[in-house]
Amino acid sequence: MASRAGPRATGTDGSDFQHRERVAAHYQMSVALKSEIRKLNIVHLLIWVLMTAQVTVSQLSLVSHKVVASPYQWEYPYLLSIIPTVFSFLALPRNNISYLVISMISAGLFCVAPLIYGSMEMFPVAQQLYRHGKAYRFIFGFSAVSVMYLVIVIAVQVHGWQIYYSKKLLDQWFTSTQDKKKK
Image 1 (cartoon, rainbow, N blue to C red):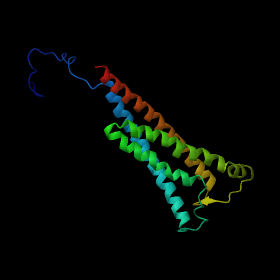
Image 2 (cartoon, rainbow, N blue to C red):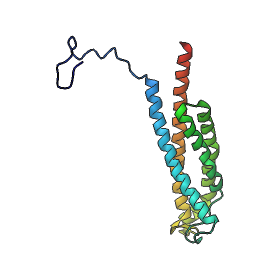
Image 3 (cartoon, rainbow, N blue to C red):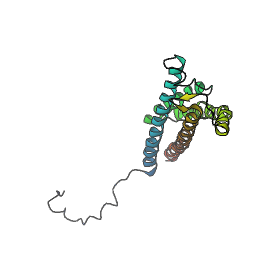
Image 4 (cartoon, helix red, strand yellow):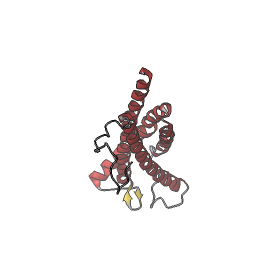
């Protein structure tokens, strides 16, 4: 063995690295996808906490309704969107395929479906704001419909990427288990 300052080991010129073991590509991809999913889960958790705070503050009348508007109907089922995130966090450490599948299916049911309903529910209010410039609900001085549409746009992207990366991760896990079965 050679030290940093000492001579190189005899018989080597530095080109003998080809025989060394490498991490398989599907393991590298799995690690990268898990990292992306964790980041998206954290962003979703932040959105969920903000939504929960808005619903809680409004329902408990902690602040005047002029400061924080009462929640739209779609916000209540969206609060269940924490379920897919919990299953996703549980699936990642041990490569649990069942939890990841449950996370993906429940993401469509508890995350994407309320967002679609919410965009339809708020459309007449947004149309009135656009045409007449009148808003009747506010969140800290901003039009509630504008703020909630911004939340919807961000949340749709987060959940779309979560489902996409989860599907890719699921494919990676399936290919690695199929390769093991073939051997």
